[in-house]
Length: 92
Image (cartoon, rainbow, N blue to C red; front, side, top):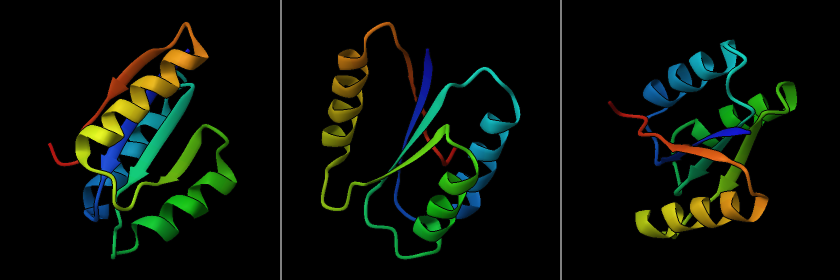
């Protein structure tokens, strides 16, 4: 299983194309979007996306520090077992 986990806060202009490109292919089994309190359209866009692609998961990570999000991603993946986890940036 391959999971792409992406910590974000705002910047939907970068997040949407990244996620769309990951979903076009069939290499990614799941995408975990950790949203650290976005005030733009990130949350509504992501929640809408989860309705149409079951590989997409939205996590409200408001108040979490970056390292907390990373640690949560790694712990979740380890608990599933057999996961290849890619933690991606949305702004590169």
